[in-house]
Amino acid sequence: MRGAARFGALLGLAVMTATAATAQDATLADIRQQLGTLYSDVQSLRSELSTSGALTTGAVGNTPLDRLNAIESELTRLTGKSEELEFRINRITTDGTNRIGDLEFRLCEVEPGCDIGSLGDTPSLGGVDSASSVPAPAAAVPDQPQLALGEQQDYQRAQEALASGDFRSAADLLATFSATYPGSTLTEETALMRGRALDGLGDTANAARAYLEAFSGNPEGAVAAEVLFRLGNALGGVGQAQDACVTLNEVGVRFPASPFVTEAANARVALACP
Image (cartoon, rainbow, N blue to C red; front, side, top):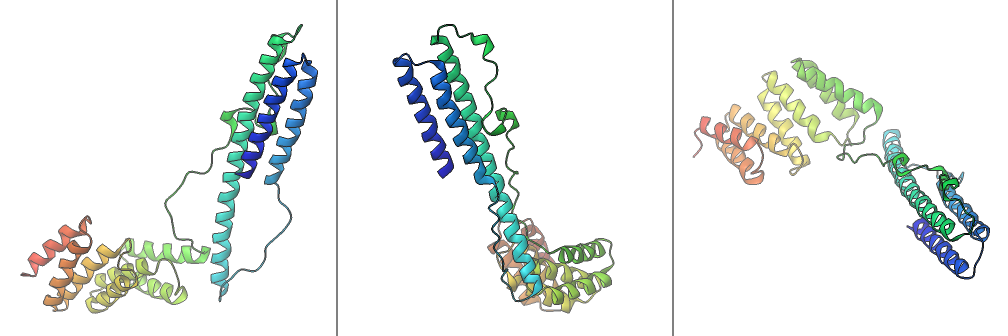
């Protein structure tokens, strides 16, 4: 990091200057003047965190929703970058404070008449008192889809309807969701949920179409194994036993570590697959 390299050079210069000054019987005041310069440079370094007042305008996207999603994604990225920079600079200033405190102690040992007990705490560089007060960056979390507020609310309503067994409402809500948010990052999940809702209504044929849509959209996605298993079950339910057996067998072939492998094997037994 440019700031870190700059601070390292400044600190190295201060140490070398202090060593040379001691060799020439320089006074503690001379060295403290050098430290004052270092304090000023560190403060300048911390000012890199301050806003410049510049604002980049213009969000890409063909629809208001696309532009809103782009803005939210950029805001998340910039927030994370700002926190990372603040953490690094605070760590630098904390380490610098500790090093300068040690330097002052050593200088006082060789300076006639200097009372080590009167030194007190070294003033913190940049206002950071100790390593314990340096804010840690936000804990990393698994990647999650970035959703607009309305999109998140609509998705949650559909989830709640499905969980409560209100399959009709869930199917309608999920169909509306797909029409309203065609480019959603939850396309495969909503298709899977719609298939489950249709299964609950006894509409097995349309459930199979929903499962096929979900699998075709992302054959390697997080819900792909469950989708493939449910598609095989649905095909068996509409009398396409041969296709159902092939589909259920693919669950173990494609996703050997998935818990749905066992369920697919049991479904194959129930269909008397070869």
